Image (tube, rainbow, N blue to C red; front, side, top):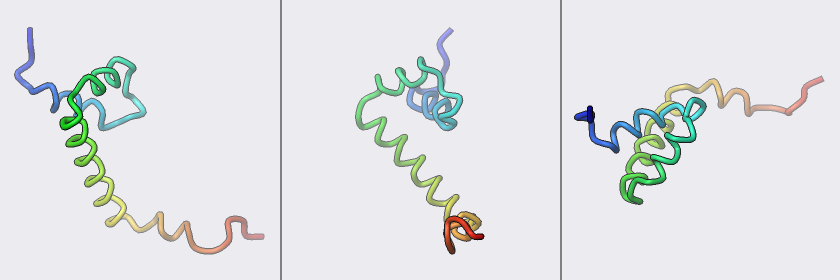
Length: 69
């Protein structure tokens, strides 16, 4: 039975966690049109931008020497 969810939304939902993306999911993503892939990547980039703006812990790690003795 075919899902009522659009293919783009289904693949975007599956590709949100790249560490669990299967080869089939990655191939399905590549079969999307360039426009659809760009939209998915743009949404993901916006989510990551928000994440890094709200979470400043990563900025504290970049201060000082790499190795402190």
